[in-house]
Length: 378
Image 1 (tube, rainbow, N blue to C red):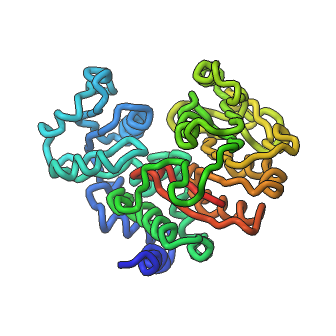
Image 2 (image 1 turned 45 degrees about the horizontal axis):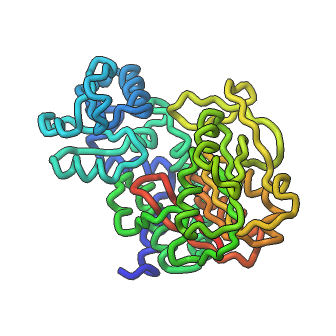
């Protein structure tokens, strides 16, 4: 099937379901082993925060967690509810009749492993979509089915607005994952070259790079490597104080990298959010965590920018609005994460096109799961 034809498959499948309830019934018909109403026991692959959150949900529902596995050797033997963490290579000893839930957002490799061993396996996200009351959704999956159903026309408009067949194929596969929670449907659409727009745009020798969500500098280093060290300057934004220290240390001897201990948003201020290390940043007027933020237009004050990357935990829409003047003036290349909220997938392209009508829009998928769907504009 060619890319132009493939794009219709997920959109047509979505149109074939007349309600959110119908979408859930389709999930249950395809994955009966994971019906929350009948689930009595399961095993967990992934002993991180999402695994612990899943275990707590199971305890509240009377679902037995028979075993917990993790590939990280440092977690071996760690207490985990009524279990102790076992290494992933011990999965072979588990009864194949036990369904396994992958408690991670990077799920393709784990699902491949479990399928190869003969297990019924699914991402934790499947339970969150089927029964959001019993399994409160992570920000990535909150109201995902509702968004798909309510915004079918917007997804068709998005497909029509994309600049190449590969982008339409990626959109089809991203939607196919959201309609199946089987990451294997994404395999052929994954491009592992994150943020650098492989084949989409060229970098010059005098780039002014803005990195929204710099973490410890990993994406800045990737940019510098990609341009062979030839660039004008890079502005790196990271609000977390401890991570910001590592960011500064990484570039202590590189004066062209200017670090900012704040997040990008619409304008200068502070945001509060609740963050229990399990469900992402949930903004709240009474949140316990305070993050300083700034609008990019305020920082640049009319100075040139040529490339903007944003991966900022669901603040991309507001940060784009805070960069509206710079985008309108300089039409920088953009690499914007479009997955933190389900509706980001269509809202971010719509906003980018409204900020500069001459942009060509591209969609690429850089991992096997809900994460790392990136909108490129140039």
